[in-house]
Amino acid sequence: MILTMRTFLTFVALVVLLACSTGAQQTGTGQPGSQDVAARVGDRSITVKDLDDRWRQNDPAGSAQATQALYDGRRAALDDIIASMLIEDAAKAKGVAAAQFVDAEIAKRVKPITDTDIAVFYGENRGQMQGRTLEQMSGLIRGYLENQQRQSARAALVAELRKAGPAVRVMIDAPRQQIEIAAEDPSLGPANAPVTLVEFSDFQCPFCQRVEPTLKQIKAKYGDRVRIVWKDFPLTQIHPQAFDAAQAGNCAREQGKFWEFHDQLFANQAALQPDSLKKYAGIVGMNEAAFAACLDSGKFRAKVEAALETGSRLGVGSTPTTFINGRAVSGAQPLDVFTSVIDEELQRAGK
Image 1 (cartoon, rainbow, N blue to C red):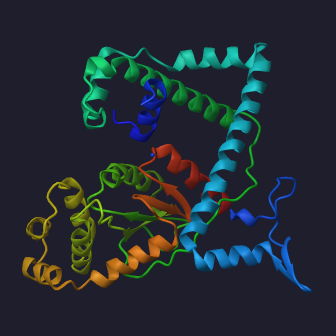
Image 2 (cartoon, helix red, strand yellow; image 1 turned 90 degrees about the vertical axis):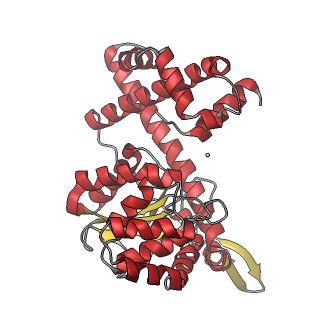
Image 3 (cartoon, helix red, strand yellow; image 1 turned 180 degrees about the vertical axis):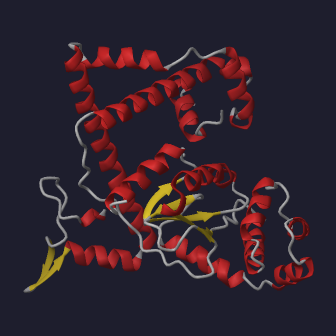
């Protein structure tokens, strides 16, 4: 089981000391409303909305990232408060303290971490262990896996309480980005689907590869209620073959073979040089000569560069970044993170 290494390394560092509108006119939050006056020049007023509009104009990426960070912080706090309320209600119904109720419920859902679990985790994440041996890392890994189990068990408990308890209506809306979808952008699902996922991705990115099975599960679960759109965002500073691969994807799209080629590239991330790309074109049944001519000509260089510029304006700084009806989900998140947003959007659309 490969877990989020940013979380794990943060855990290790702590132990051994060694990854909406924000102007939503909130009241009582300490945040100014969009019509509040930020400054006056003579008899002219400058509102917070004026500031936000100029910020988006001058620094669209920074504005988008800050807006998202504020929403994420508020939403995490909201979800925590809701969870505490539901737990307190359930504990009260059983006549026990909230902490006792949670401990008992978590105990039902966790299993002991075995030496095999630790060894598997170590083997799958050996490159992140900074040269430490399994014996050296065993205690830390055990603690990390136990903590992850407890967090997952608590999340499952809260999900059950939300489903069985009083109706929960979230009134704050997430920030949404307007993303133009071109007719030639590769997509799966109908254009009029109530939920559209736009994925900014990189063929050489391991986390992009990791999220692909999740996207396939989403398509299988929701069918025509969901449309998935691909946007190129090759991180050339760390993935030197990614730009050529993105161009190659466009050449494959031109022959109606994008998704077959997409799967080939993710299955062969270690070999994305031009010669390999041309070989994969033959494997998926393309006209190899036409594909080679397309790739060698740099025909789609400008299109890939335009996609990079679009993503940057939207605040995309890493891959994969997926926008669900304009709502950003960063990273190779678990299925339930995606489905929680999709379900909210379907509810919002009355679907």
